[in-house]
Image 1: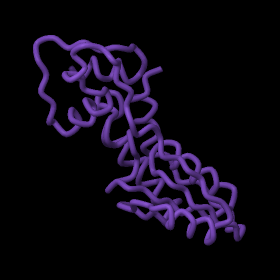
Image 2: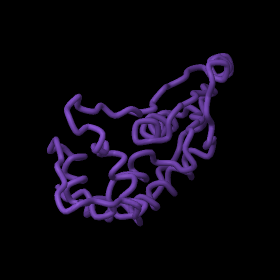
Image 3: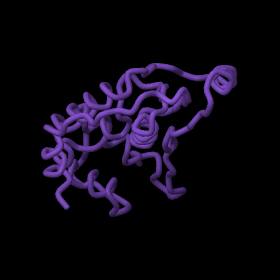
Length: 168
């Protein structure tokens, strides 16, 4: 399945009609794929979802690391625009403390934590000091800040490994 083509087909999709608010409020911590999906589904069911994230922008890995060759920037922009229409309560650049979490638990009916994997696993092998975690590599590549040698070794052939290979 060519995700880029599917994404381009969604650019002109209409924002769905929303049901009236139920009175239930849910705090969603994380504005990446999982957090946005949870918040979207909650709003589709009539609940108010309020998103908190420590980054400057919505989208998490979708915005920061997936190469534009696989998911074009205009598709990401259109989807995030639609998300903002449906989910107007977004608080970015929010580094939440334990006290903040306790306050969210008091202020909301539910709290969903959808922060994703933040710490890479590195193999404990000689030469690991030269390793670059794949998501760091993809983030740097997306910002045109990556420097690679003539040979790049990629361990893993899943989506992230294939993205890293195509960017290298």
